[in-house]
Amino acid sequence: MATRHEIRTCEFLLLYQMDFYNDEYDEQQDIFLDELVKEDPLEDDEKEKIAATMEKIIPLLPMIDEKISEASKGWKLNRIAKAELAILRLAVYEALYDDDIPVPVAINEAVELAKDYGQDEGYSFVNGVLSTICKD
Image (cartoon, rainbow, N blue to C red; front, side, top):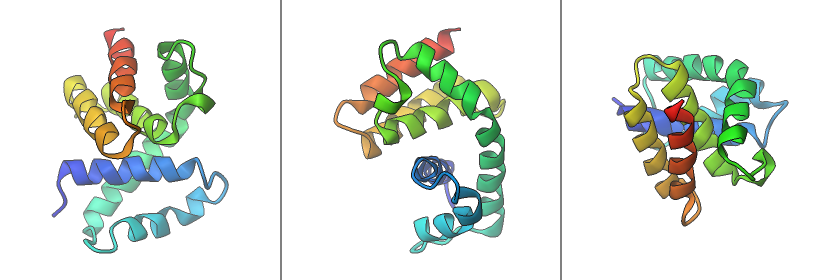
């Protein structure tokens, strides 16, 4: 059984890959997910949860990206490192649109993902942007 952190990591990695496979993403999502967890396969219900979350996030991306743009003063989305952008997208979704996840948990998890996958000081940037977004 995967932990919530492991599931969140898969969601982040799928969002990250989406930036590279725009048009093919929908068709390839299951393949991407299977590759991510090849060594430690997910249960079917865990895969369904991830797919359901992705289906909720994708239509909200324009609004999420707008909030990120507004909060990251002086940084256009295309200048934000792709890992940090994917982490921010997931965290903004969790903080603002997922009632099951408390805002502090969404921020903390995003900072931890940024420490693991982002650039050296990326976690600080992620924390600052999320703090700005979540104040409102």
